[in-house]
Image 1: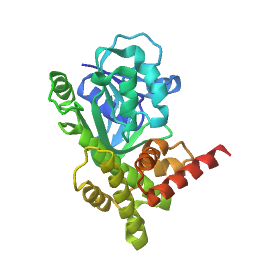
Image 2: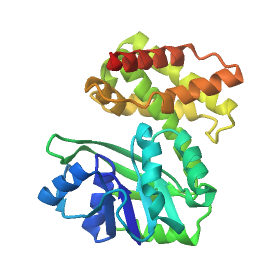
Image 3: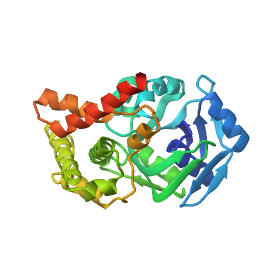
Image 4: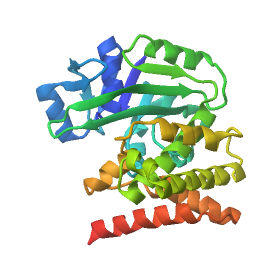
Amino acid sequence: MRILVVGAGAVGGYFGGRLVEKGEDVTFLVRTKRKQQLEQQGLIIESVNGNVKVQPKLIIAGEEAAPYDVILLSTKAYHLDAAIGSIAPYVGENTMILPLLNGILHVEKLIEAFGTDKVLGGLCFIESTLDSQGRVLQASPAHTLMFGERNGEKSNRIERLAESFHGAKANFYLSQKINQEMWHKYLFIAACSGVTTLLRSPMGPIREEPMGAEIMTKLVDEIATVMKEMNAPISENAAEEQLKKLNAIGAGMKSSMQRDMEKGLQIEADHLQGYLIQKAKELGISVPVLEVVYANQKVYERQQTL
């Protein structure tokens, strides 16, 4: 299959690089500066799961190319609108769009832009970053990408995609419950990013402080309550499951939003916590901890504009 990966950053660069390493037909859609960097030094992945250096195919937005079979989209939420415009010329009648963004709002936007049939469900679990030299650094064992039809069907096209992913040196899983998996991850990431940015700490000290652990528990419960009232496809014990995961991750783990705040970068507050606040208000649900989390994030955003 012809695969287009939007961006060659910490997520797209990693999974796209693993597919290039396997021998798949992968092209990266990148900005001019990143294209020059990759042409000069190649795409470099330094990982506990194995290092690799490849020389990928590259295009910049606007360059002519035939439609791709699948487009892997892993941009930040605040770049989504621009990404939609960039990929539009490369979306054909049979193109599948596989988004790996956190949250769920992006699915609605992609469906609005390209139609419901073209949009798959997807998510990933990976702790990776791009260093100052443009290398993808990945220091933890987790490198999982899950994908599937949002209606749960095991279609011919999704099986072809699974075959293309099979054998790459990362965990690519075809799920027939991808919608539920996406909502479960949304619960996890909204809670994890919320509590780590609020308390400015990795997970370990938060869990060790009794009030920190209590805040985390209440936040998970509030988010799960909103999702249930939205009729989201989460399991009955989703809150307990995700809280267990939060308590099991490494003590030094920082959320990507926390890392972005430490660097003075943009964050996905509106896409993650803001969307849940909006739904809570529409449903008349009280979410005091979530509101404090979101207020902290919005104050940070205001400070960045000063």
